[in-house]
Image (cartoon, rainbow over all chains, first blue to last red; front, top):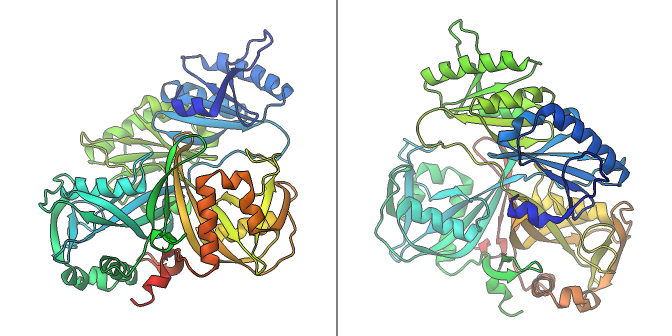
Length: 280
Length: 280
């Protein structure tokens, strides 16, 4: 079982009273988690599941989770027929869930957002770091755009921005601030996207583009960047560039980070206007 | 088929050359989407899928998506055995995907984050709006906390904060600013969470708590709120409250919103420091 599932569970096996049921562990919300690890015949699984559900109902269990690795996909249909619905899926597993009591379901929702970053990097000559992408909707049009990319699973926004710039252009940078962000719905299937525009400070200047994804990369005079129809005719890009410039000139405060420990000892980043909070 | 899938697809059927294959439509990235709408025997599906994959390979197709509604879960196993992996799932469907070419897969990632909001609402008497929750880790401890909640699918952050406060306390508010945000990883299975703290301005004052989820709600003197060990002993809660107070006193700028149209005519919110951007 994964470290994450483990952290959700108390690792306490639910007593089975001698009846043949599925092995389950309790979670912290009055439910149980079944983690299928070994191959099983689907009819055997169906019988075990039926007996288990009766038992969990008697025990007053609430949400029942079944984690099915891809290699046991022969069991999906049995779980659905027993009343389970899909909760979420990752490449290697499908999570199904069933709310047993006759009360409104308080199960947590699936992840709803993807997160992406864009980087505003300017050098002392007032040149902004820009790229032409090999793929995607801006490719083949001669458009110079800011480096952008997706935030990886478990990655911090401030780290993702620095990584994307390094990967696409070879330039080393330091995160300064989130200067703005944008939300967009139904960007991919039903999911929403949060796009964070970050100001980064360059620490190296020699460009080495990422051959696979980047057609070209350069330092471009900010005036030339802004003169592109792509920027000029898009209210948002135009405004965003002006915010970036204003930040560069020391006249704008976005959100910088402070690392904080939560009660569970996990480190997490807190983003706020440090300039204004200086006097707190 | 859903509106979202429709918007991804060009709605152009892939010609089948008379061979018996699955009905598929092209997407905008050189792939195809198969949307299973009618019941099908799993062995019939397997044969059709095999023939279809051969054809898509010949045609140079890249990503092949199969959207399986829950009622056709009998086909999941066949798709996996044909080389498909899970991409994402919602309660009512499972999306599987298969990258056909011998090149690195450029398929978009699944949603990685859940988004939540917390609301800082203060009245003219310097009383902050607080609740005691019926469930969750803060219940039964007499802790007065800020109203919080999850952002619904497709909902804006600024809208979610106003909705949560109305639901939990009955108070009408107007969104002012995101004053800070926090990211937390592995908050639920592998997923991360972004938590946005919003300053809202109250427009009504008579509290009517949400009976199902809220044990109690009140306007509480800010000093009493801050004196709680729960706030005082948590560096982050303490700091956050000070930011909220500072904002209330007009000495802090967070990110307010502007509504902008994107190229696809969808409206989306852009969050930035409007106070500093005033001179742009």
